[in-house]
Every structure is written in C-alpha cells, then in structure tokens.
Image (cartoon, rainbow, N blue to C red; front, top):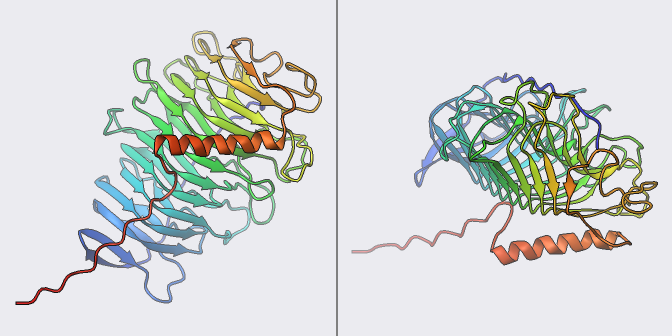
Length: 409
C-alpha cells in the first residue's frame, strides 16, 4: 500500500507557432520539416489524417498541437521532443493516435518535466493504439466532453512504453504515469488493455504506472482495465527507502458517489517488480480480480529493494463516508510479493497490505522462494499470451507498397 496522494493537475497549453511544409500524398497530409529547423511544431487546424517526423528541442514547444474539434488521425508519426510530443488541450478533440513512435529529449530548462507522449483536456473521443514511446511523462487525460458512446470514449490498447520519467534535469521531479486519468467519472466504454510498460531502475521515475483519479465507468459499462503487462515502479535512486508509486492505483478525492472513481474492473493484468502492485484508495464498485502480482524484492543486480511495501492494498485514503467509499473488492489474484520484514502470509512476504485488505478474498499465494527468475517467468508468460491471442504491442510496420508498374501504349 502506498501513501495517499492528492493529485492536483493543471496544464497550460501555450506554444509559439512554427511552420512546416505540407503536401498531400496518397490521401494523407504528410508534413516534413524544413531543412535546418531546430524547433518544429505542426499545428493541426482541420480534420484529416497526418503523418511525418517532427522534432522540438524546446520544452515549451510541442511537436504536434491539435487545434480543431474535427476528427484527426495521427498515423505513423515519429516524434522527438523536449516537451509534449502531442498536445490536445483546447477541448473537444476527436483524436486517434496510431502506430506512432515518440522519444523524449533532454529538457531545455531546469525544473521542467519531460514532455507527455500525449496530453489531452476535455476531449470528445481518444483512441491510442499500437504506439511506442520512451522517456516521457506518459499519457495524461484530464476531464471529458464526450458522451461515453463507443464513438465518444477512451481506448488505450496495444501500446509499448519504456522508462516513464518524472525527473527534472537539475534534480527534483514531478508525478508521471504511463496513463493518468483525472476527472473522467461515469464514462462508459473505457478500455485500457494489452499495453506493455517497462521501467528500469535508475533510468525512470514513475508514480503509478496507471492511475484512475476521480475517473471510471458506469454500472452497466464498467471501465475495462485488462491484460496489461507492467514491469517496474521504483524510487530514484532505486535504493532509496521511501516511494509512493505503484503498478495500478484507483484514487480520487471526489466527495460524492458520482464524482469519485467507480466501476473499474481490473483483471488479467501482470504487475512485476513494483514497490506496490494494485491499490484501491478511493471510490466504489471497483474490483481487481485474476491478476498476477510478482515482486522478488530485488533489483536486477541482486540489491535488495527496500522501498516496496505490499502487493494489494484497499483502504479509504480520503476518509469518505460509506455513501462514497463502498463495494470495493480484490478476489482470486495470484500473488508472490517479497517485502523484507513483512509477514503476510509468511516472513519477508507482504502479499496483502496489513490491516488494509480485509475484502481481499480467494488470494492464491505463490510458494517461496520468489526470485528474479520468478519475475522473468512472468515476461515469458506475457509473451506466450500475446502469441496465443495473435497480438503485437507497439507499432506495426507498414508493408512496403508495390512498385508502380509503368504503362505503355
């Protein structure tokens, strides 16, 4: 169980325009950088499908800015940025991000975060599939203006991310998530599935890899949070004794049942080598079941991980009344979580948070020892799962187009 944290996210959407040449190619709008351009910003003012390579070394200048409420598809883009790679914060966005690659560059200013792969405010629809990004502060989605129908909801699937990094270049840090939701309560048809997130010790600083804050589904359409592989959630440096991050946390300070985190169903996720795995700290009608939570209590070089606490925690962090915090449950999860000095269910284990997981039923406690090899076996299990389902995470390379055949008369 990680300590309760109060999230306060306020995002500005300011940027100076930088022109890029645009040409129509095979029905796409393909934008190329001008030679010698140090900073590049594509401002999308009209709907359509866009592709291209963009690079911004200025932390204040995003690579791509969405400035329209018309449907936009970003496909096969390659993005390099010291700031946000894609920003859609003007409200009403209808955005699909497909098959793109994003790379965080060193910040251009002190006390400044790495950019998000994608930052969105008050969107109508967002679909993020088959992308890869590294050394960013992940995907941040704040509030919602869609109606929750299948065409106006949030879908995050088949993505691969590495080293979510909230560190500043000159010391200090900010919270960073692979996926952070804030202020999306009662949104039907949410799906977050088949994503792969790997964070390396001392190369990353993630808070909760996935955090639902005052966000969730509905009674008839719970948010589906399933078949994600999450590896790594460490302090910086990784040998530090304190840390509040996790694999997945359901959180929120909403004071009413309709404004807190609710109706989230998390299942068939694998959470490996984290200081905490799954937490329910707020809300109602949230259920984690049939997940695998494995931590050996060791860093890859064999050094003990001392900041970790417990695999599963369920507690009323915001001390809300039973009208707001109720009907939360863990059931049938497979857990092997080493916490040095722990005692649940055996010495040096903390599969369930002491005193904070009474409604945790049907837990399958893996037998000792839980080792680095046990963690590695989870990676093999994940790969087998992808093969069995015929799925691939990250970008799918397009097949080369056949060469044009010259026609003669």
